[in-house]
Length: 431
Image (cartoon, rainbow, N blue to C red; front, side, top):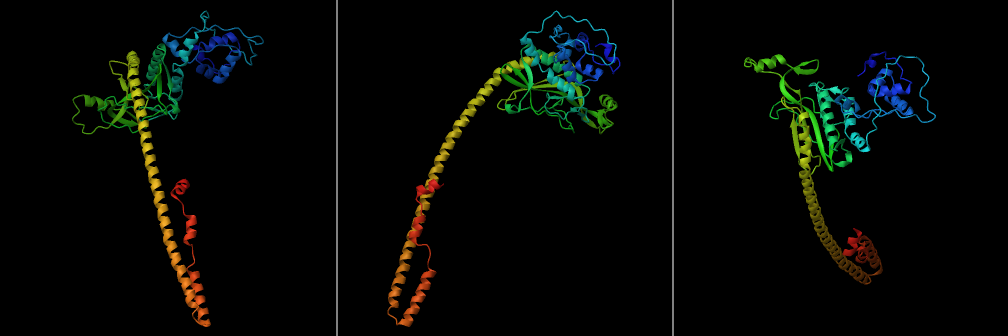
């Protein structure tokens, strides 16, 4: 990078169009905004006003690896535009670096692959992780959840970014791309065990950071999930200023011949600087997972071709699993419909039987009531006839008592109950 960034921080952005063009292709936007005390939006607006092309996401990484595309030529200004703006203070500007402008802009297909290469997601990691909180064992734990599935310590962060950049570049060359899963896709995010030795003991006191959505690699019409994590090892450690660090003295004692005197050693799971990449199928109806581990002899970058081959080779297997799951789901649906049909038929018969029994029971009760009504009516009729045989004082008294008795027994008659009685069909219609 140019030494121009070490000049006075009170500089103003170059007003000369060609100078600004050379500046944006010489230094990253973050450093320009810091040097000239402007926002990225202001820089973008100024470049747009002057029709100055700017580097795409991932350009500086590609430049460091020597694979950056050619710098596009500075186009002509539209009519009515001016190349210079009045300056408040004259400032010395370093001489611009000469940049070739003979190569035309990349073809549309190339731009499409670059746009889907995942560099924007890497930029998010570089933005949010370094400013996030750090656990006692040194891992970043950002509050933002919509990030790539990466668990890494402060010391290994740059190595993780370097691997992801190379991995995504290799995917882009094959026509594959990286994105985050959307909430409505139904793709699950697989958990990961970050122990370097799965059989090793030790618990992490801080829970592992988990993203809100899976990190997805798109290979043709198949989706793969992936997680990258720095592995841990269970080693002697001590706590200093709220952080666990390796107890190198104790480690040397244990590895040497003086391990017997130490009956109790405080250990913690601490990051190793070596990574584990987990590839998996994010579809809930499938079961495919493979892990690639970095060792002291073999890094993950050298295994990138194997990673891509593993996913390509798994496409037919996962497609078969998806098809089997679809067939099973269809069979379950058909069986459910049959069960539901049998259940509805059984319920229909049960309700019809209940309605019939209820109507019959109520009708029988009305018939019993009718017989009782007839018996009571016969009693009062014959009692009135008998009352006529008494002399007037006694007959009047009997008639009064009969009226009181009739009033006492008054109620719904069988005929009135019959008006409210319902047939089985009426009961079923009512509900």
